[in-house]
Amino acid sequence: MGSPITGQIKDFSPIGVALTVATIYIDGRHLFNGCHDNPDIVLELEFELGDRAEKIITVQGFPVWYDRNLDSEKKLFTVGIEFLTSAKSQAIEILSRMACKDENMLATLWKKLF
Image 1 (cartoon, one colour):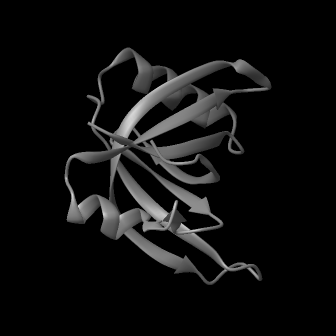
Image 2: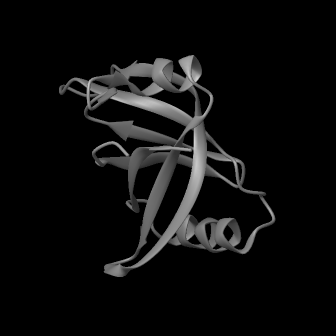
């Protein structure tokens, strides 16, 4: 399992999320290319619900695109992640409701080997 990185949700839908992250590398491996080079590697995203860090929903995903975030003065990246969980799952339904209420909901993601 790789080291966690923190991102901010830029866009959310029941089938995936766009995250802004400060680095495109996790433990020296490229977030997008590393997953595509080895499809057995997936991302686990932890969504903190509101201010309660103890209430976390974890969803698996796979990066489908990435780009430099040119809207920021900092060197940031935006990563599009498709959820591997059904859009009708309880976790995604809860996240959809929360994303509508809290645009600043944070997600932490890391690689997990299977």
